[in-house]
Amino acid sequence: MTLDTQKSLKFQVYDEVDVAYAALGAKKYAQAIGFNSPSQYMISTAVSELARNIYVYAKKGTVLLNYVDEEFKLGMQVIADDCGPGIVDIEKALLDTYSTGGTMGVGLPGTKRLMDEFKIESIVGKGTKVTIVKWL
Amino acid sequence: MTSLSQGSLASPDNSSNMTTYVTSDCLVFPVQAELSKQAALNVQAFILDQVHSKSYNGVIIDLSGVEVIDSVLWQVFANTCVMINMLGYRTVITGLNPGVVAAIMDINVDLTKVITAMDIQDALNILTTKD
Image (cartoon, rainbow over all chains, first blue to last red; front, side, top):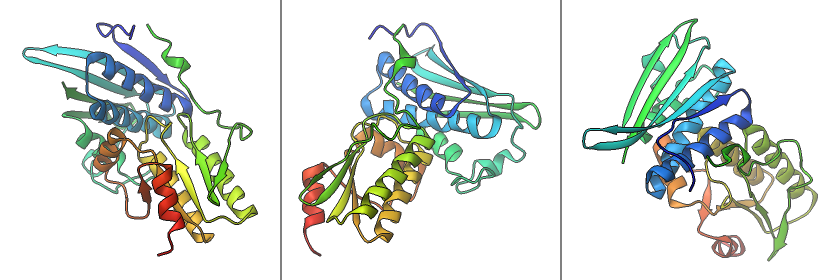
């Protein structure tokens, strides 16, 4: 594994295939950091959900993978950032089975369950930023 | 830096690289690469077309080559199973690994419509046993 985890890794999401690239990239990054196999899949699935949200709702955005080294804690942070329409009702968006995009509405709440930390900031008309962390 | 952008991704429009084989009168469809939603829908159409053209004991979709399955992809495959069932065949999904299973459990998608098996041999046992 030649992936340098000290560096962040950025994925542009413009197209549907970029969703899969970001998810695969996240899996490799998680593997390089030292996550076990189930955690790698959880992280990559979470990234896939976030990248898909970017593609479906905002059309384009970025997914940034970071290695976080806090006191006594190591982990992986993912920031999914877009300049899309934003989320009108964040509390509703975090409910299971709520969706405005014609999907099942399990993406955001599922992502929250898959990761250890979940933060969402969204301004209507400006964009959405989701920050998730999984600790090693 | 590894060439992350060069991962194995299925071409969304190319159905010529989709291969199936038949064993014990069951149609086996191995999915060998990461899929976009569109590619998964193409796979769905391809399988339905194959199933419709000839008679089989059942259908096996082998997902062992797929690394990441999120809610949307899972839904496409679950729908595919339901559709094949509506055409009159039983479908078994094989090759899910523990990581994928752990992840789709957490997303809270509907898991009741899908029969899964460890590997193709197990799936053949399920499909060839009359219940």
